[in-house]
Amino acid sequence: MSVASAPSAQTDRYVHDRLPPQEQWPQLVYDLPELQFPPQLNLVERLLDEAVHHKGWGAQPMLRSDERTLTYEQALVEVDRIAHVLTQHYRLQPGNRVLLRGGNSITMALTWLAVVKAGLIAVATMPLLRAKELGEIMAKAQPSLALCDAHLLDELDRAIAESGCPLPVTVFHTHDTPAPHPHASLDVLASTYTAPFQACPTAATDIALLAFTSGTTGKPKAAVHTHLDVLASCETWPRHVLKLRSSDIVAGSPPLAFTFGLGGLLIFTLWAGASVYFPSVPYTPEVMVQTMARVGVTVCYTAPTFYRQMAPFAKQHGLPSLCKSVSAGESLPDATRQLWKDATGIEIIDGIGATEMFHIFISSASPDVRRGAIGKVVPGYQAKVVDEEGREVPRGTVGKLAVIGPTGCRYMDDARQTQYVRQGWNHPGDAFVQDADGYFFYQARTDDMIITAGYNVGGPEVEDALLKHPAVAECGVVGKPDPERGMIIKAYCVLKPGHTGDAQLVKALQDHVKHILAPYKYPREIEFLPALPRTETGKLQRFVLRQRAAQSSS
Image (cartoon, rainbow, N blue to C red; front, side):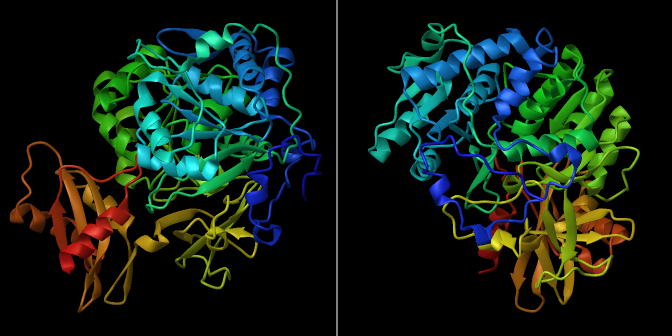
């Protein structure tokens, strides 16, 4: 089943013309009643305008911070003003790309919504990116305008200067006043417009955003998502698993430039008529716990490492309003799930998603959680575990995950499309086992599987065992080349305060793993580090650890 097409409203065809050929596209499935959408569709009009004009949510809080709170009606006014700036002041045309650079804030959320409502394509970038990385994104996306938090201008200005191509920049302010700069102010420009903005009449299949992958492989790619993709995502995991309520207050750490954060901390919140809180300062584990308690947060999104770090503070201070905790972005060790449950009484909603799929497609919520499993396939999607030829393997057998649903991978101008999509199925690159009841158990990224002396060992399984030791705060496990075994298991561990990384502790950790797992799975080498390499979204960069291990063996 497919969605009928409407004429595209995007006159700038730059991204459309760089989509993969149709035969390389994933199969898109819309087999639920709630996934039937009209051919002409603007996702912001559907989520925000209808919230005010048809759903009666106009007076409800939508965006919160310590400085201000905007209702849905007030947010709509601000979005429309920014959309006028884009289309009237800058004369941008539907399909033009707009680079967005900012941390999680009310203004960042408003600018994203305005860009998409105007029929433009949002290209949100991580706040910590440097000039070289921004330059690579600019070279690929070819934006017509940049909207940037004034505090993050330096690297953007440097990227523009190094590119040799002029790019108009308009700044917005989130908190205190930054250093002087020569760029136009979005606040000043927007204040001159008061009329409502008529949403661009985009086709459902017109493009809403370019999502650059977060770089766990070191080679970011641009995933393309349409208005239809984003709205279809609202009708799958949020509807059937999360079950957000309009009274919920949502908070979390993933950036809006990351689709995990964009969905959880903006799109899905609007879909449910709920509100989201954005902090004035970056979260630390203790600050996040204190903030959630003070604000009355009911739903939290963050990565497994943060849940582990927050657990002692949650146990100490309590989180009486918190009802749901969502984890995604990397593997959730069972040790972390149980630690958080002991601290709060809340069963974490685990999930696996992908930038290429927009959001979560395998997940389960309490009371359907099964120890060690991520969950079952989300309604609207289909998933299976397959061999190298794409044939489904018997239940209980390790294989590669394959997924189809209402969203799927379409890279912009990237030969790696055929690696991700094969025979119409998306292959996220994860090794899984599916049990007889349909639960999916994560093993590793397929390039993280360690083959040692003929045994297949998933790094996350060993990590989970190590995390159960009281001395280990964080760890990463990879394969190290070895002439006799092909690979040996090597662990990189960050210790908790008060513990010393000596030979005695190495032996204790090895014995600890042997007691929990089959003896061949213990790490033959353990190295202690002050911190692990992670992406800005909190994902462990195992490829960096693999490089380090390979260099130590040469």
